[in-house]
Amino acid sequence: MEAHDTQLLLIQIAVVLLASRVFAEAAQKLGAPPLIGELAAGIVLGPSLLGWVSPNEVLKFLAEIGIILLLFEVGLDTDMERLKQAGPRAGVVAIAGFVLPFFLGTTASLYIFDLPIMVSLFIGGTLTATSIGITIRVLSDLGRHKEYEGQIVLGAAVIDDLLGVFLLAVLFEFSVSGSVSLVNTGNIVLFVGLFFVIAPVLAKALSPLIQRYHDASRLPGIIPIVLVSMVLLFAALAQNLGAPHLLGGFVAGIALSRRFFLPFGAALKVDAEFSRKIQVEMQPIIHLFTPIFFVMVGLSMDLRAIDWTSPFIWVFSVLMTVLAIIGKLAGPWLIRESVPMRIAIGMAMVPRGEVGLIFAELGRVTGVFDPAVYAGVVLVIVYTTLASPFWIKHYYSRFGGRLPMRGPPGLVSPD
Image (cartoon, rainbow, N blue to C red):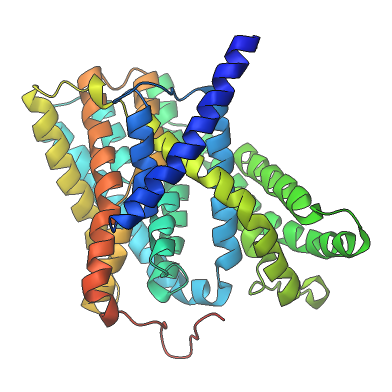
């Protein structure tokens, strides 16, 4: 890399960090979630408006670290007992929120817009996505990510991501070879399953070593250095086994949580004080990298590339957005919860964010999407990503008092 390129990149990183903070502060003062400000910063700085910053490979890499560390923090805050209690409900919400949007999106593309089957399948696949990062950030800003509905949403979003990986692998193979190999699909399922079995055990086994090393060392910064290294290695392992790399951070966080215990190893428990120390020392790093991810989502949206005069763009994007929202809102009505709880869960599952962009980008790169369809799909992602935090916050401000701060009987709130 030449000196001029390095200088430009350093300036861009500085601008992204400063703009993310300024816009987040402005959003919060206006009563909007801070992540809206960070998304807006990306739209303003990127090709949609000023064009000062482009989503280059270095920024993408920093953004990937940001989402991995965000999911690590989510894992640290996750109460496994509450997540286990929410598990069956989360599974129902996830499967319904995966199947319904896929069916609605594929059917509408085929029979209303008369698009080819492969294009329709990719569109349906894009609508299945749920952005864990955006959803959890919104709930965190509202102080609800540790509550019962937050655990249902978290579990459902993780399952949605896994189902999305399987579907993406199948559709990619189909688009390239024209057929689907059950062997390849089975291998992906097997490897992801192995990761979720092995990774928590490995992380939990390493935690006493980290604690011992921390207690023995006189140098500051041991916890962030060792944990960031471990989280990145877990992310790499997850991706190597076919799972989304961001789930590596999530699993590592869960295993180091003070509320996660292996059924066979009392000796591997991490004491609560050490877990709190992990959270305190990791937060500055997490808060440094995470905004870059949300700015990158905004940078990836080139709103000027959309032909706003095309009737197809408006009809297609609006209809697909409606179907995407209906598909996610319908899932919670299959579980036994109060009406306010069902609505809250459904709304939190709507944002597509980075996961939807992955589907859309693959459709574009493989030549499945033409420019008009790609622009329409991106517009759906923009609608659901930018609008969701506003209506979720508005809903909680009006009806949040009707939502319980505890889950089912016998399920206590975290400390």
